[in-house]
Length: 284
View 1 (cartoon, rainbow, N blue to C red):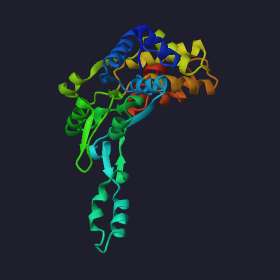
View 2 (cartoon, rainbow, N blue to C red; view 1 turned 180 degrees about the vertical axis):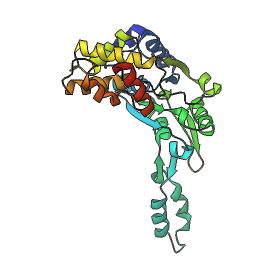
View 3 (cartoon, helix red, strand yellow; view 1 turned 90 degrees about the vertical axis):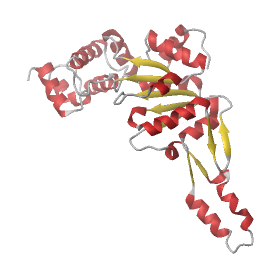
View 4 (spheres, rainbow, N blue to C red; view 1 turned 60 degrees about the vertical axis):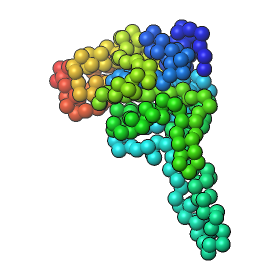
């Protein structure tokens, strides 16, 4: 995917219902032009994952998502052998007269591709989204760095598998832990902050056209106040959109009054935060 300018990236993302600021559009433009992985950090709900999804739509590419979690290992991300099928095949080869075919147990037909291997084989026709890398441990991060360094892996039974052209790679992190400098050096880095009030109003209206200008602004103003409280889990843009949609369904015209208080859990999803938010917005 090639864009002639940062402005072209901004326009393309906007047409795909993603309103990126100048900094993010520049990061995307350079990542695509330089064929480098893009590492996006920021609070939960600011739109990091959506960047990868949007690029896949724009490119008409397959979105390959690797969701990271505590305890994930290389086998779960790269490949595994289909042991059940191998066992059935081994039983079919018993009696020894065709023992030389045992090596076929590790043929390609028994290999189960996981997201990383799938992305390497798909190459430039795919967008690899490595989501919430900060949830994985240091060992997995080191393994991932090795894969991203040359976009190839070695399967002992089959040899080296390399991407002819690397896929577009988007890595996201909520920064629950600090990622290593080595990985950051391999990637282009961009921090996605909460949007300005006016941009958030535009985002809410773009993603939820049924929301009026007045209601979108009222929600954005309320969410902005909540973020200033230093909550454990401040509401992101995704929560602002969901809250606005809920208020529309209830027939509310602003983010105050009964309906807003009753649906505050769409925006704030931590009980201690919820109590503070109620006190801030509704003078409880």
